[in-house]
Image (cartoon, rainbow, N blue to C red):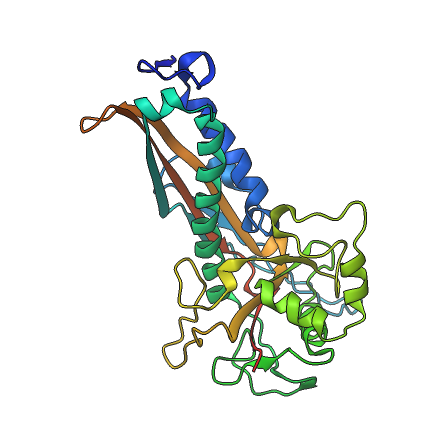
Amino acid sequence: MAISASAGYGNLPSGNFLPEIFSQKVLKFFRRASVVEDITNTDYAGEIENFGDTVRIIKEPTVTVSQYTRGAVVNPQDLADDQITLVVDKANAFAFKIDDIEERQSHVNFEALATSSGAFALKRKYDATVLQAISDGAGIAASAVSGTTLTTTAAAGTLGTANAPINVETDDAGINMMLAMARLLDDQSVPEENRWFVAPPIFYEKMFQAGNKIAEVQVTGDDTSNLRNGLATPGTLAGFRCYKSTALNSTGGVDQVTLTDASATLATDGSENVVLAGHMSAVSTASHIAKTEVVRSTESFSDVIRGLHVFGSKVLRQEAVVRGVIDFA
């Protein structure tokens, strides 16, 4: 049922604001803008309806293969039915009002304006929350990288730490780090198709400024290059589809990924940052706008549009996610 607009609400289509249609448009814009939507799978999203919903995912069992000798007894293996739980336990809300007088005097279509603005606001919060979960869930027993030399001193699941970040500002250090992350995924038999890499914008700036050969391709670009979903380069680099996200900036601002290790924190001057790499199968997300509604303000002559975005995420394959800590000192 359409919700009638107040007098002067002439810029919304037919003088009506349809919450259901607005919700669908916001979600469409949101998915086009979100990096997380492009690097995670939504295999279980259809089973999610409300905030607090839970989906129990049966982990793929590990089958043991043993050598067989003719005439020997073959003992069947009991397969483990371990479960992983994906819970929609996060929620963000938005609410804005459209003043009757402003609406009457403006030629702007507030529905279109609010759709794009609301979508990007949701994207910023959502990407930061899920990328934080991915960073915390990185599980590869990795080696550290010091410059271009591999060592074996890093904590599990990391390439560099806050106390010993990897400098990627000079020569080919940036692409070499990406190659090391790709090799670590290779070591875990992670498929090469659908691999992704996410870094802050400054990572690509420094890498291309260092005179790296790949910069020539990026600078010239091609007819199909674009920045949809924060896509940083056309094609792939080191086998990764490369994305950039301001959620991986480290400037002490809001909606930014941090290290949860109490023994070390990132510098907040932008010189140290987290970078992430993995496979699309590693992380599952479920996200939807649970409710959008229009109510009449009791404090002013305006209508209030508000909505609730609920979501959950889970790292399903820790061995298919690797985290790095970089600096530009």
